[in-house]
Length: 244
Ligand code: NAP
Image (cartoon, rainbow, N blue to C red; front, side):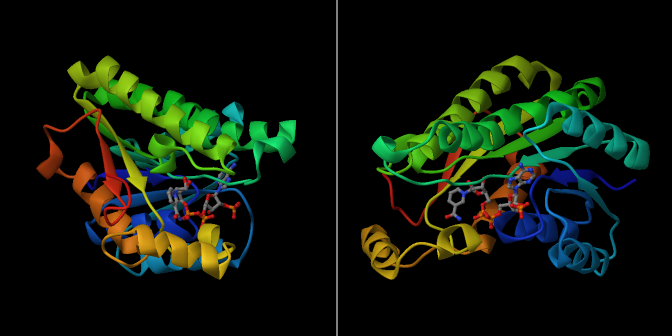
């Protein structure tokens, strides 16, 4: 029986690449998406073309009931869940002086509360199986902070605390919990940045290039695999040396 991986917010960008990478490792895939569009069916087709199953489940990760149904559907369809990648995330960047209450709350609700909502509903299955891997997408700005991102960096710092606390709670059940902290990765999330902002960031990166979605997906593959069986509670930066 194939192992099963759930990736949230995975119809594009980093999440999609993680789903394709794990599909190539023969995982059956469950993908969560929020917005109905062509990307959803395209992603399903690309994954199934790799010879594995792909279940697509619409759910807003900031809604606890949606996440409960998400976990139940995966259990009904596959009967197991081996890997959870909490990838869904948004930005609403602006200086604190201009930030609305909703700009702050929306980012926390999706990035941090969403990570709780999905994990809380999936973890009973992992504990019962005495096996599981949880990989949370944080960010280097959750470690360093970043002007214009008090909401986003708070959510990503929160994910680091969540990761370490949960790793301590469930390690004895053979459930391993780690975070990946990407730097500047080329996706739809970062394409909105102005060219001079992008060039300034690249100048600060010792490897002198933006990261690719594959750079992140390969690390997630490692953290999902048996090769990382003695690693838990860690934050792995994938940032070309941007933050040391
Ligand atoms: P992206 O291209 O904007 O993709 C984000 C995905 O999350 C989309 O599929 C989006 O779906 C989904 N999503 C957003 N809100 C959701 C919700 N409430 N419920 C379910 N899905 C939702 O972003 P990305 O660059 O691939 O980022 C992926 C993750 O990596 C995020 O957690 C991000 O914070 C983190 N990260 C990215 C970078 C970077 O440089 N790109 C750096 C550090 C960390 P919709 O189409 O419905 O919005």
